[in-house]
Image (cartoon, rainbow over the protein chains, first blue to last red):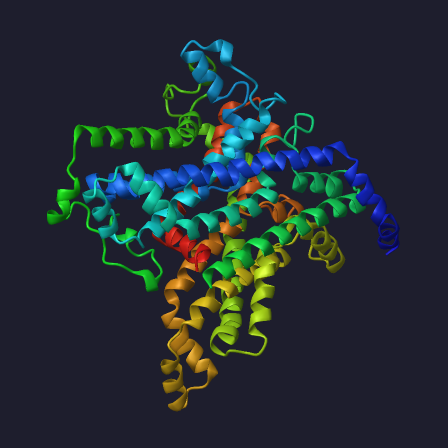
Length: 256
Length: 303
């Protein structure tokens, strides 16, 4: 219990230390990237793909193709995150598949240490996150599209609406609730992101891919600095609760 | 494969199934054109490229190191070689990890689903007092990040002698998931036909009878989807097992494999064999339960 008492005395110190810690601020800057990779890009790409599959491929070439493509794109969602990290860590390694492809097509000069370069690592993490997450909005949007009365699309087509007009005027407005759900859940997931970073880069090189959850973990279990780790994880918890609370009450209000 | 596109919409919004290329509606341009084949091909190429990492892993898990060094990571294996997989299997103790993962995930599913069923029965059908605050509490548990709880739980488990044991871990994860299950089931139960329950209780059925004979059979679709989901989630769990299940005999599949990363960075074929071992069980599960998985996700996300 002596530890508990000390933690109590250090409590404010830990928070003042937090605000002047470059690593902590770096981890928050990186979270902004992570949210782009885990929430924004998959949502936009997922919207486009869902509309393309539902309103074009499904109508012209049958639902079989839609199911097949949907399953393929959803697959990364069921693989353990740790294994996904293992797999991409290997593919992006200096001797990995990406460099070997570049070599085969004669672009040796483009070969990189993808995860080992501080300027590139975060972008690679972002790309892996997009790959992992795309299936989630896609499946959700495709099921949301079932709500749309097919006659709506037909009427629009008869009035001479182009595919793009149907997409922006019918598909996107009708999918608003799903878009909202995807953005809320993935933004929260982004704030908590841990395993991907742990397995892919360990926060490095330097602090170029450090995220708050990993930073807290380091302090708890690697540096045995429990007070500081607690300050970090309390900050994440508070942020998640604020964001989730705001978004959920907004959603409840919109639902009536 | 083509049937389940219609089953995902919530009941209130259900529409007549859209038949692809159904005869008379074709006036609006459902005809196949060279352009539409081009779009189809483009999407197919995109999906294939998307799946390329899996293909690369598959190719390299069966190569000898020498083959990899001379032919790179994209060629077909000179000869299909199972020994790398067998070797990694042995070194990771994969049989043990697999059994651990199965045991833990089944336990989690059992605990989570039973607790959720009882909770939701009380909240959604029993209409207990304070049910809105209870629901907000369960929702809050869902949102609370593991990262904030992991150290207190680690400390608690050490004090209680549950640290590095499968039992305590299974209970912990089961309870965590039951919060989500309670939330989901309560909203399903709230729309349960009251007349059925009233009729049954008029006939003298008690609470248990109503739960087992009426509510349970009718909510089986939701429950089965929940089982599939909880199984996958718990199989894929990372932070809690990383902290709480440290010994080799207790580790789960993803954890046991991720430990490899440090050891094998210089051995590419072993790395991809390890990744393959982690991918295969979930791909098999995915192929078997594909329908429930996609249905479950929508059930959980959009009430």
